[in-house]
Image (tube, rainbow, N blue to C red; front, side):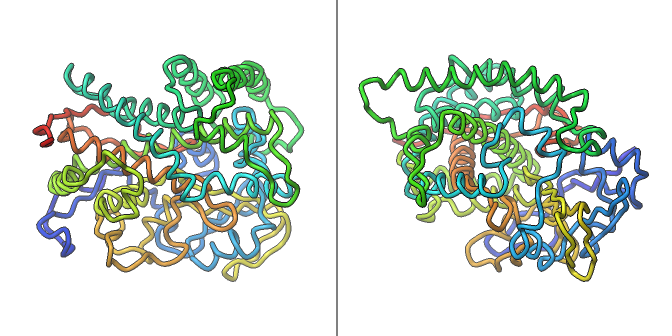
Length: 478
């Protein structure tokens, strides 16, 4: 039987700006006391990777285990992480398994590409993700959130709501509006079906994905190829529909416009149609699923901590969100942003970064050989006993203005180094605005007592649907 942490709110350390709010530790499985046997460890990679980290990973700066004839390291020393992700990042590449699993659905977009192809894409995409460019996308985000709130309100009127599904649809709508400046009514159901099919049948890592060399097919590769033969025409059809709507040459200021207009600053080259499609797939898939998970976990934490929830609601109701551009940068929603930051600490969507050493290296005194596996797991790093005070507790005060900043390379919800997530500002903007809008209108109350536990395969998601009662608040004064 799994062991759960105590989720009962008990008095403990308080933060001056959150005075009166009790300490809350959300439920989670206790890590195994010892490393799992190899067979159990490989099963955890497929079913729930969080179960594969033993207790000592949360206590020691570097841990090592043997893995199929090579070493596998988990790094929690900030300088070791800096070494791998920044100083010597050229020596560390994506693993065969990661590429094999993600390429059929993401193509050769920014997330998968390596070397010169990645540098070309990163430099070409950079202007589309500047703060100014993101501000230009906020109206699309805000329109999607407004419509999404009406759908959630209709669901809430009918009874308890499965908020993960609701947020999943909301995040997909935001991605569609931001990418294509239109809603996803026509394509959303089919897109959700594609994603669910891939995640359930083909997106889970298996032993052969890890051990078979690149270029050698494994049984699931045949299914992945068949999927891609249906997936590519679907994406091309969405892009063509959007482009046909603008035959008059007008521009909608959406992300597709930005991507189509992007040029490599060195060569002046634009994306080819195939490259553009792969970037669209990457931005939609990598963006909406991670945002949906973050919003769900933020709602879950605030339901466990009603006193904090009421303070966030008061902040959101006092803020003018009719013009949401810059609502973070101008200081209107500091507590809402702190809740999102703390949610990303406790439930990082990207729970692990896995790299394969191309050549030998020395990392924090450990000899790394070619083909060794090096992991940086934000799930472990953000709960490490040497880096955080009370690491399992929900404590948004850690991220409020004036609080000490986390140690560098100890907080990595969007990665670090040259491959830090290019869409981080976009993700934060939509998450903060969406959470504020929800709490403006509703009080969130869990409709059940059974703990909701994190489960990580591709992203960190709840292990089961959880239903919430959404209790309407008094309407805002006009």
